[in-house]
Length: 306
Image (cartoon, rainbow, N blue to C red):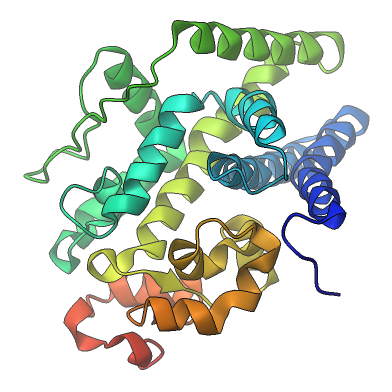
């Protein structure tokens, strides 16, 4: 059934998306509460980290105010349901993301640091992803952000990303973020125990969710900042491309379209942005990079050639 942007079903699909992001987290936490053993913990950790990444994608949709019809609903839920629970500011992150859309693929892209990895930097890339998987990169990123210093990669000649100077810095927003985290801590304290706030919320957030976000941002603008579209299966969509994010190149062509409309705009998106790369799976693209296949080896319509 075709759902039009701005129809009543638009909001229903927004509610459904929230359920798809949060219900697996709730199920994982309930499962661990009932069966506290290492295997259930590992499974819960993976599910929570993956769905946290999905929540960050919904935050992205509220940056564009496309998840719901109401601008106000997008802003409120973007803050309290999608950004603050993940320890992210909302206003400055939205401003930074919109700059990314304006400057994508250029040296001034505020997200260039995530995708601008040359094939000669593969070893450093692997080390950085491993550091992200441990949570060390997230802690370093937060520390340097609080100190007003740019995020750094692993020790190398690779330049650090410049700090994005947002005009939307709001001290009250940081207070609200802390209060939301306190509510989460309290919820864990009265249910599983306060220690599990760190083991089943903070740790998945700063390790797996952060890793998936970095990996996705690299892949969706790989090959020198090109716009990518992936033929992703259900597993890849669960971990990396939730809510049609595997069609990210089409989103860049028409950023005002809601997530459920992205598959329908392929033809007009390719007409507007003929340089969109039609790739295979996320995994295939990652393996291509790790094998050292140069970006110049592919034209946009030859992405599936090995």
